[in-house]
Length: 134
Image (cartoon, rainbow, N blue to C red; front, side, top):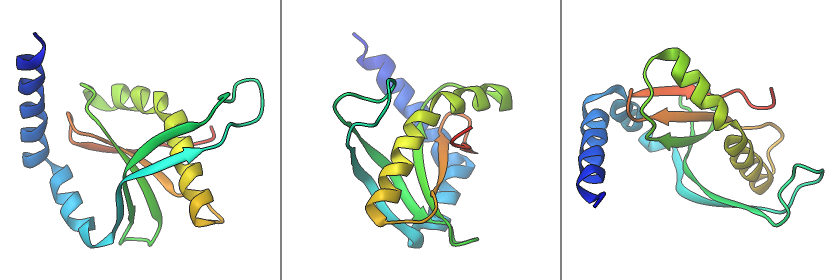
């Protein structure tokens, strides 16, 4: 029953992506992409709020920013958000996920500093850099 609505939404997001600034950004960084759908698996953490078992997921996009050489973990989001306030609010809700992905990449590559974490919001065609650890 939900298929027609899901197909319509997917078509809308594809159109927004194809006609918005994100496609051009993806083209610009294409030679600098390190991985797509990179699996992440982290052991349980410490403390009362840490996961008991493990954390797993997939980094949508890992690339080296050609402007400054920094490593970037990017995650695509399909949320219907409009305007900077909604985008920032939603981005804060994904900070935990971003922290896990950044930790996984940092640990796997033996990095001394954290990669930057970005959310690519497909609906508004906006990239939001999410500060972690705040």
